[in-house]
Length: 305
Image 1 (cartoon, rainbow, N blue to C red):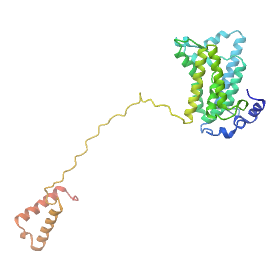
Image 2: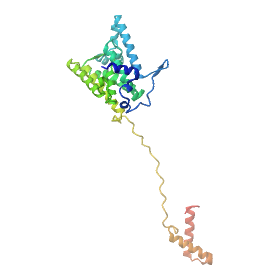
Image 3: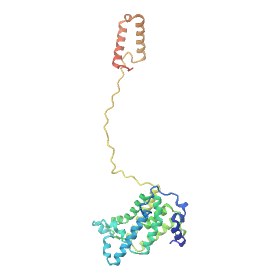
Image 4: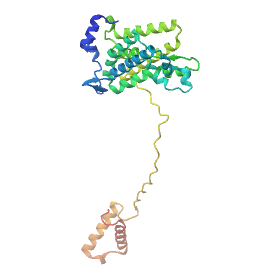
């Protein structure tokens, strides 16, 4: 439990100020940290909204129980056998059945104090993803075990799992009686494990381990400690495209009189001879070589060498 000084500090200054801002600023606030909505100029963050929904469900549950209409709540609680028969809505509504208790009040305090720090670090979207995973993990896992282990579930989930996420992010922050967050999380989880083992409550044990496990893994992933493996089973392979054939390179006419420098030199010599003595001075062989050079130039076209 928190001491009176700690409670007073939390009310006046907030979690970061009371538990050491230097230790809790290691990861900083997310750029996505923004209110979910506003009410009369006051920001309502996702953590506040979760608590509001649970408190409203507490009031509704209490009214129905007082009016002896508790049978209506049976349509909301989770029952693995009924879910397997098609009553899927119970996976969503089980957390709305909350009777009045001290444990409920303590859970709401933990969500507000420690859940807000997780939300500041992760941002709105990531926090909603985390809480959604925590909320749906228990009924989904228990449904999978339903054929061999029928089970029921009712009431909010997430306070302890959010505290485990907080302890994963800020393990060395003192929380309960100056106990570091990492040790407090281990002690709380260990106590509940012993309670469920001693009472042979396998469904609650499975629910506890699955929710705190998913919270710890998600926090580690957000810290960048590891990445989830990519599944490429359903990824489309890129389509192959047939490209047109490249034009064949033009072969050099190696038999041309001007294909090499020696042939060009001979043509130049013939032109010089014509300039000095006239075209009649050429021999038949020299004429033939000059005509071949002219024909080759015509084949090449203008401007090509």
